[in-house]
View (cartoon, rainbow, N blue to C red):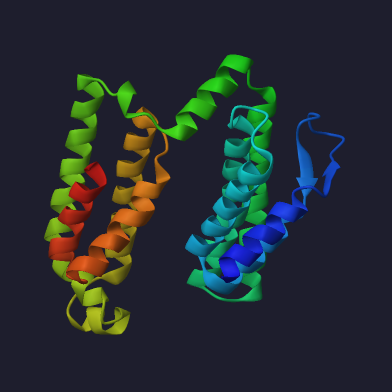
Length: 239
């Protein structure tokens, strides 16, 4: 209910925008990001993403699209670039200092994305929009082989480390008493997960809902044992 209400407020605020003199005419500033940030800080990054999607869906339902959905896709990308970094950082360490740092990082990412769109050619901008949809049809035997090798190596590592992830479920202090080097495990796991994601996204584009939904559904159905949930999440995502 709260997500729906905040999404509706964002949809209304989309109509109260201000032109920016240093940006192209089709880019305006509105106050949606503030509401999305408040919702994300209060509830979490997934809820912030849900607010963004509710806003866009309401806009499409009430007004339709005048840009063949390219404007709505860019709105989602820019909103996520601005809102999600500060929200994720804040929920890792809840403090005003972290929130301010996160907002600064989100602003930098948004500015960088906007600058790229501003200087891109028509062909490059169209390619970026198509890439943001995600397209399995662009895969070739060569790219499939590269992705298979990277994913398989990552899956082997995560499968071998599954007992350590299970140990982390009891907390960092308990995991350390079991001989788990938490900092190294977290760093290597994040690095490897980032490499796997980067390789797949580079070839196929963004298909974000798979990464958001599949692991959570798997854990809801099969429990928290990472020896089972990690390989099943991979299979669920591939389907």
